[in-house]
Image (cartoon, rainbow, N blue to C red; front, side, top):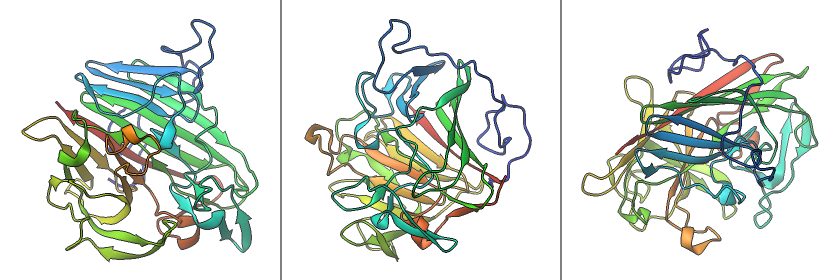
Amino acid sequence: MDDRSREQQPEDTRLGRQRLLERSRADGRPVEGGDRRGEVLPTGRQLELARGSVRAVVTEVGATLRVLEASGLQVLDGFPRDRLPDATRGQVLIPFPNRVDHGRYVFHGKAQQLPLDETDRGNAMHGLVRWLNWAPLSHSPSRLVMGLVLHAREGYPFILSLRVAYTLTPGGLRVRQTVRNLGAGPAPYGAGFHPYLRVGIPRIDDVALRLPAQTYFLTNPRLIPTGRATVTSTPFDFRLARPIGVTAMDTGFTDLIRDPDGLARIELSAPDGGPRVTVLLDEAQRFLQVYTGDTLPDVAARRRAIAIEPYTCAPNALNNGLGLRVLAPGATFTSAFEIAAAV
């Protein structure tokens, strides 16, 4: 798979080549949430999808994935409908995933300063769209397209048209993001997603992880990458499936090993033949962050799930340039990943 999409009908739901831009229709409809009873929920309307035994809920605020269930398995460690998503649960990370060192970067000779979301470490964090209201552009029982125009602002003076399409599959969910640069000049761009995944057991220590990454990022104490190293002979070598054990990670990976179809597959398996969850990354997703939740503020949530975060660029890409897309005026870029459960 590459990120040059061929023209297809909007109902095409393959992980492979698809049309870049979704046809806009304002028929999104809230199925679960406040509109029926006049209440307003913290994350706005709750847009539900269902296909066979698979169910998902996406919120208006942030186009956030709040629920994903398959055959009775709670695949996603989400959050209640009357709460905010803590710890970036299920959120969309655009136009940069992960951290930007001190929120500063220089693009085409001009210095920019982003808001510092991670105040304890002094970094900008996880993009600019997590708390914005997205609009449902189309909504069928098994497919939802959310849209947003991200206007220019201090620290990111660029204009982007964004689409995130959520499509249920027989065993899970496919997610495709598309961006178009609406501005008059080039725009730097990266995308990521932040699902916390489970395989039906209380803690991740006994979960077998297969992570086909050959290198990981070395970081400074503020978790800004300083270089890359091989995973060989380190606690981060999960190229062959093995239990996570006590390994703690808030770790970036790259140099992903891909199968003949071009996809990289990360697998989580419960012991003794229990449920298995696979995350499939297309060729535009060249980076991955894995977080075991050891530092979550909610002690009860620590190591309850593992965040498998697909990225199109590296942490601090606005400074190091790793995987960063520079979109010419009118240019588009798309990437996709899939979560598949076997119960």
